[in-house]
Length: 285
Image (cartoon, rainbow, N blue to C red; front, side, top):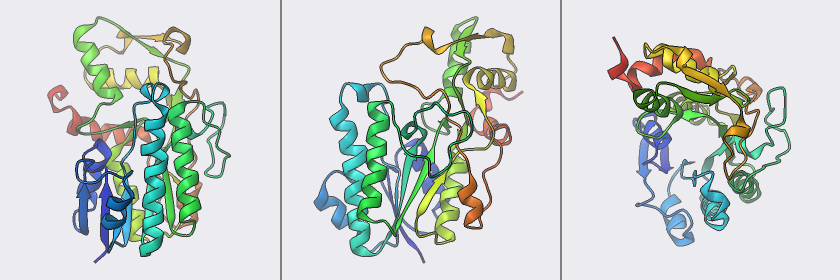
């Protein structure tokens, strides 16, 4: 049976991964169990595993502008140590990355081999992580980039919208950021498919298919909850200036899945229709 070490098991994606990989010989390590920036801990932890799935990450996008060293330690140096240990022990590393490694200026979906051009400290730390894992373990590293993630047990956009709906007559949401809402349970399933297919290396985009704006997504959320979508008012990013630059275009292409004989991700609308009752049973009539 495949032996799998999962890091970041306490996070939103980590929990779904723990479920998706439960029938394998799985060790699910939270940040309390394993500090991925500690070389001795990492070397010992990776010993004996066939696959390492790294879902550990620094994800405070705005705070990374204030503490870039910490972001780089967790998002770049930690993955480097995991990749080095995986190479030493002959394990495959599956490393989670993000749309923030791109500049957000495209108008067509980013292909998997698009040159990186991050625009924020968080994005630079994740881009450095990608470069580090490939430098340490080029033939045994799989990178899965994701974006606009929502799921059980974490902070995410749908939950924020419904909380605001409880306390505000209207909410203003930007129309000029385009992306792909992605259910963490779907992402966990795609990663499981990569393990089962024994894909040795490469870059894959782990987002649900299609595209929408945050404003349109918010209207879908309101409608699905039985609320009036007209309560969602359109605005633009210049009215919500934040420390870290958000990509205006976060639509990722999925060609690599087909290249290795795996199914491409389903539409974000289909995923959200299935996810909503599981995530928000209190809003089901």
